[in-house]
Image 1 (spheres, rainbow, N blue to C red):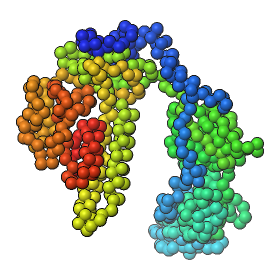
Image 2: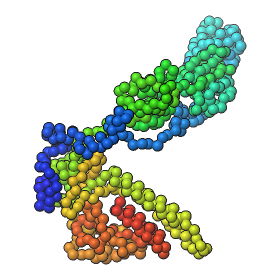
Image 3: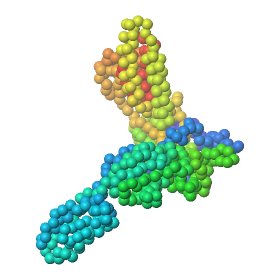
Image 4: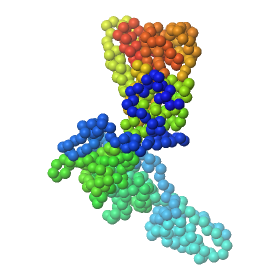
Length: 572
């Protein structure tokens, strides 16, 4: 049967103004259903509260409609790293190439190992001379300068076989390459001359120079210059995004020049990571920026701030129109999602039939969902429905942090009038510091108490809510500062102290005046003020081990706050 039928005699849904069809929700699960068409139209329409919120947030002067984004503290552009700055952290400078790859072009100074056996025996290391030749006794000079390493063996073999044609075997190998020194200059951290091999990558030499100057250097305009001519040009963005990087073979005296940075645009907001992106002079529109920035999937708008000839600008642009927007150096673009989802997802836990997740319209209220949920008739405690909400947990965590911060500032900074008092304060300070450290690890559960005079409050649901429909219980849980925490069978008429005695009594650290009862619906009450029910938890709080009345009062309040937020009693 449904919750509505099961709890009709309690007045649980008396505050509902309309009759609700039990199928009134889209279910996620094996037995999924849909809202009726007329209900869909009602749910899709904005509620009066939403309409009022929208109207109150409309900025008529700027022509912007809809909810305004909360003001975020401004981030200085210089505090945001440049896209590409992550390249230079020493990862390229530690490994040098040996030059022994098939595409290596042989140059004067290289060393070639030659072994010939059979009709003639030769075993020598032959240098490539200034004319680009190696000289083989009995064969003569062979031109090898300018050929690739992969072609070396075939050319030497052909030359030897032209003289010794019968029963001759030839083996060649490049023993070592001529080291080179390359100048790195321009807008880098440490310009200078750095040693390497001809096959070392461009990034190796840049990393040797400490990388590109993040304030002024260009990641998109890097040139390799030889004898005044540009041998190769590199765009490091192409390497970061596509793995594309020119691989020139360096010679002694080559120069790597990092040019001045081009127009840069700062990107923030709903992006994978905020960066300063450098644009090329011929691609300074929004599409060029979208090709570089990694936006979150729900981005719908872009806020463009900058300066133009006519003065500062601040334009709020739909993402579909942003690709045609012209950008200038120094612009700041904040991407955001301004479309609110029409659907929320809530989760059920506890005693119920059917799916555990429901996709609902944004203005769905709790009673409407409960009417669509069937529960076991004799096993469900319909009076103890509760709800966990992320925003409530965040507020509880913030309140706890504020209380702990006040404890630190008001007590740990206090002075002492005598040496004896100072010694006591030192010991208490250690105790408080350890307590604060443990207390900050507590994670509030965000439980929202819905019971009100025997009725369940009909609140509007939010995305991510977890609704708990507990089973009927026949036990009492005893926890906190008792000798033997345990669950025992509920006996009508017994007091909290009776159950504590059955659990071995109070521990030495127990505060016998602070005994709490935690209901299944999340409500927390003093044990002296309530009559126990099945499913309750008796929670004995610890006593603050101090004779300082002010400190004891503060600690007791924080312990109570933690017990309400997380249903735990941490000791001191």
